[in-house]
Image (tube, one colour):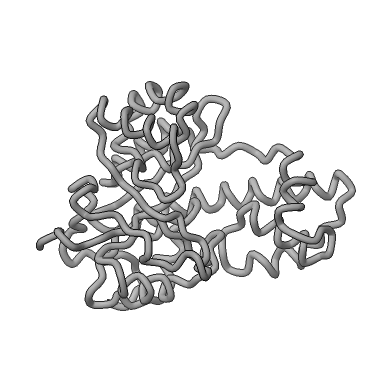
Amino acid sequence: MSTANSRADLHVHTCHSDGAHTMQEILDRAAVGLDLVSICDHDTLGAYRSEWTLPENLRLLPGIEMTCQVGELDLHMLAYFPAGLSEEIHDWAKELESDRRQRVLKGVEQLREMGIPLLWRDLEAEVGDSVPCRSHVARALVRGRLCSTTAQAFRQWLGRIKFQRPALTAIQGFSEVHSLGGLTYWAHPRAAHIEEHGAYLLAAGLDGVEVLYKNLKSPNRRTAREFQEQHRLGICGGSDLHQENSKFVLGRFGVDLSRLDPRLVNPVGEIAYSTSASK
């Protein structure tokens, strides 16, 4: 297949984590301007377990954005599975989901201990069937009229509490992904983090870097590119879209397939992406 005029977005979120759109909405909109898309929700493969039909002119690369301990930081790593999603992969992702749910609920308990009367029903209304994120907590605070905007929620409260760290270390995460046939990429890396933790992640088995990221600015982009080239790592890229608006429509940002790691460009054959998706 020629990739000369084809584009991809390998970092999109759905309502199964902190995005606003369903899996089907993302796929339908992506099919208008993209050849390849990857849903990479935070610590969950829930979107792939939902009911959806893949448009004929669109290819799907299964992925997940996992939160990993790296030194004193919690960094985001993208894991892609070009051969499709097995039951083993889904079971592993459910462990990440459980850990994230526990971490967020512990954070809510901290807020309540601080005297902030966030109601569980307000949080449940925001989370619904998705895996909770801090943004759900922020929206619940707005829903409960405890603040006026989500920005205020982060500034006034969520930035003051220390959420429980993920159980997963980068070494553990990379090892598990590789054992399941996947590849690991550093999501939206910052220059300072590359300088501090780049060697550690290389030793842990990092496969590539999200160099072509919509919001990655200099010097972060320059440092990421130098790091990727120096160590001959693969390249991925995407929009990190959570919600469409008048200024940003899915498919408007796309990476030429020829610039991406070839291992990601051609998901393998007729392998099912989930146990429940329509084929």
